[in-house]
Image (tube, rainbow, N blue to C red; front, side, top):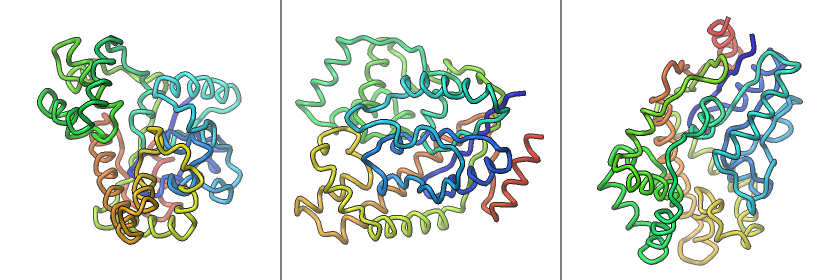
Length: 298
């Protein structure tokens, strides 16, 4: 029986080390479903695993694309599905690891088949240019409070897609997405690492400090030519750009990265709580967690 094991959880929850230990036990490969680790130019601010952390386990969709060619959930679905089918020719198991619930779902269930209308999308893109992202946020809050509360409302692509669907159908995106749920393509075992909130926040704060020590400011400087791309309008990068512009101090930039990462983690957890049949696992020694997962999938 071919199976997918998903190791999910918020940022800084310890997904990589657990996935690598599990992959070594099962002698299988890992597909990253982290929407920021695809990009070759971004490493420190995305907490991309190092070769040492990968520990010889094959990883796919890390350093696989350039920020100049951003990857949509639909593109990831096609490319990752091809890779899974290729791996299944020799392996019984593939591990999917990441914190991007939308990309995990794209691979397991397929991207949604909800309608598109280029004219409506262009209208909302024009509204974004003329009135700013806050205008789109307010509009989404009016028509779909449920999605507003769980979406990354700083991502204009997500805002515009939800507003486009609402205008075409007259229904909230949050409602239609639930109705559009599918059965998994594969036998799937979905695990979410669940830290107590204060412990998770402490891990996040510490990770940000390590990123700064490891050269995050220099990495952002090196990517200055890409700063207008949506890919760089993300936590850890936009705050350092503000510091480099002289708008805030370095200390304030660090505080904001920590604060915005904690908010992002909260949104990730909101997403994972909606996953049917997910098994939530409490932090423990890696060996214990591997045993827990192997027992659950037996």
